[in-house]
Image (tube, rainbow, N blue to C red; front, top):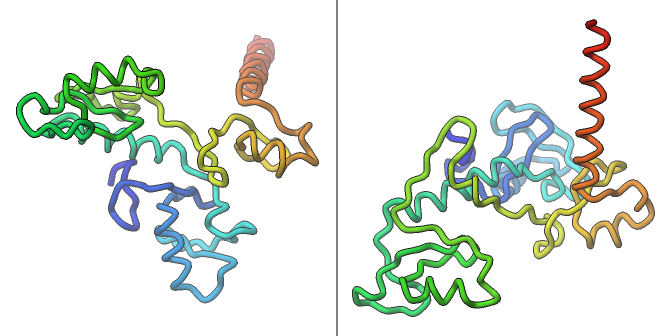
Length: 217
């Protein structure tokens, strides 16, 4: 079982959510699992059978497993480009000129030589990540080479078109700007941008490191 595969459905993760026992499953799998149980307030983990109490809105409110979500997306992309023999999905040419030479990660479409060039010139798609068909990605225990230039966006589970940009210390969760301005407005002082949180955490770790060296000396 790879990190990209859900243990419940045996398919690549789709919107994986993490249970308090640290096992993760597709959101859809957890919803189906909950339907088989008597109570809607708790859930038995499909892997370890531990009973976990669900948050207010049920399984949809469980935290996203961003690591497994990224692993699944990267694996999907790798499979699409490594041995692909596809035609362009933009212009629809069926002859040799329409043979796909690239794959757009954002649009999720195969592109021929002509459309690849046009894709890079258009303002709306100029910053998209294009992967060359036939490109091989080295997979190790730590990462995939595709992740060096592509990191799937972390989208808010409540506002799908918004990226997670902040962290609420009070609620201990990642949030988007819509969440921060409306749902966390009464304790906005507890919310910080991720860049600021990362900087503070780095400084805290460095302080701990210095104190540990002094203690050892």
